[in-house]
Picture (cartoon, rainbow, N blue to C red):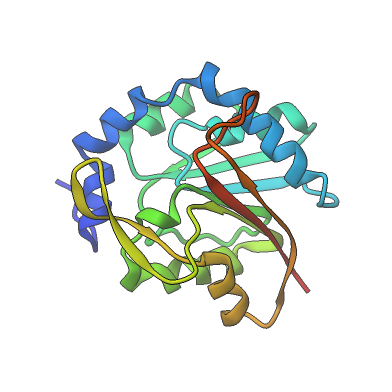
Length: 206
């Protein structure tokens, strides 16, 4: 049995993480993700490599793949079932494990966290910020639930599994070598390309 630093990692590694996969309908989310990332990537230059922290079955990486040519895609994922499904796609390098443990000599043009920081134990959040910053050559993209102050909410009947805060603002305060490029909101009632009420932020190293 694998051991992790936090209850949240165990949660996503286990049965709940397996069930989460079945709720992610690729046909439902892919077009919305393509629309979202076409907007975000239009604000970037010369992105040839992407790493996603917490990629699950790769719905974000698959959208980015459709928008770009000759791009190297890497995903880090804790849930074994999700890893196996994404590896079957054969267009991304998939690293199995917790993002809290991720280490590499590689850096990437574009580091992505979408719907992941909200599930990180707040005591370890600064460690994830450090990794996003360190492994980025140019850009960091954060797409999460926003709140001006930190709050913890019940998540599908589970406590201490969903945390909202100003993730991008905390990174800008923590790293003087970052600037805000752009940001936006995606509404769940969008009639064409809905997302789950996320706010996205594109940060750039300076």
